[in-house]
Length: 242
Image 1 (cartoon, rainbow, N blue to C red):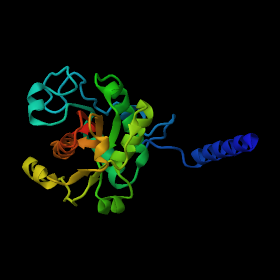
Image 2: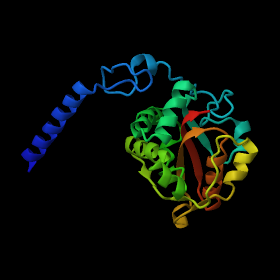
Image 3: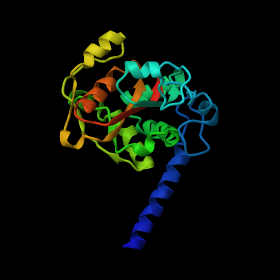
Image 4: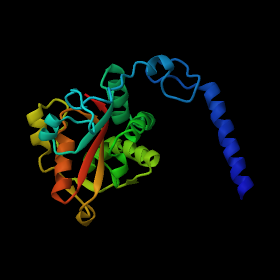
């Protein structure tokens, strides 16, 4: 059985190399041929703008405590926030293709950078569970997958923290947040979420994960729901800060 498994693995590797010869992997952004296993060439990698890790990831003022300054802590219910990329044109294109064109490998690629930053955070070793921001079943059916779950799975694997896949449910179908104002976004997600298995919330620390932070309305609504049900701390992480 072991030799059969090794043989099958060898065949798969050879077939993969054969496909690379016929259809060489190209940079997602500029379409140049890649010389290593990646989705971006070195030139395009350098176009990814990283957020300064010593700022408040929300207002961008200087902060050294869990990625959120004292002023923003009074405005948002979560206890800390980590993001990794500025939402520049390259990042915007990658996120769009990840969410709407099912390029799931983009999510895995970008979330590996987020995991490295989270490993440096002060709170990560207090986290009990990773929780993805949920999609309503209608949107999930249309899109085919939940992008926050793809990110969360990779973070869970790298950081060795348990993943709660369906712990938070989106009970209300909401309009897309894209063209809404801050006030409209907040109203749009009010009462949209509920927690399943509430007995597992009390006293636990959660890492809530999404793709992009814009106004914080969605993660604030979920954070408040978790805390209303007894969560001790809720920290949030996104790939990008719009």
